Amino acid sequence: MTKRLKTKYLVIGIWCLVSACGGKKSSQTPTPEPTAPLPTAGLAGQRVALTPLTLVADEEALQWDALIGDRRTTLDKSDSIIATLLGARASEVNWVGPAELRHIARRAPGIAPDPDQMGTPFLRASNIIDVPDPLRYQLRTLMGLVGGRYVLVPAGLVFRVASPPPPGAAPRGSPAVRPSGHLAVAELSVVMIDSRIGRIGWRTIARGEGDDPWTALSRAVKSLTPGLP
Image (cartoon, rainbow, N blue to C red; front, side, top):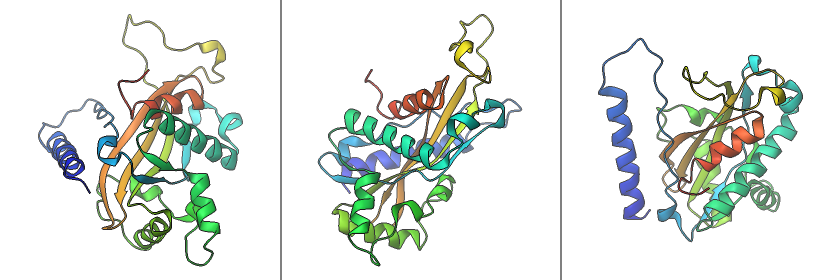
């Protein structure tokens, strides 16, 4: 790991600790922490695995069963959006996406784990730093075949009803195209793992709003690379 990347991890960790412990308790709904940008400067030129998404959930009030009710189709489309946007917006990193990871795993049956069966959703828990076995061993084995060190894991995608805009603010979205009449926010939990030591060095929740799941997810992914349109 480069010194620059280590320093960025430490700064983010200290900031999160101060944010969580330094303030007084409030009865108000806590404001979500801002999305931390991807530490792409420290990853430039490296092969970084991008694992498949395995968890998608939505609040019942959105009434999106017709849109994301087919789990396999939803996961595949989400993977495609994430991989395409990261490849275009963080092209300095040599991303090894879900499709290529599956291909690598199929070429090493009995050795490489199935990328779709590694059980990554539990990594959403903010208190996890050390990756436990068997996931730690699986990632290290897979990255030995990929030829890299770092793994970006989309640990879960949740669609929630967006909070209403403040009084007097312009309305967001077009209710005419929303089956449920709600604007949604996509919350994509993402972690970066150093597979050699089995530790999470960076995590964030990327958020984006939209009238449909794919617009919301696209905006969430774009928030990982601020400064671009």
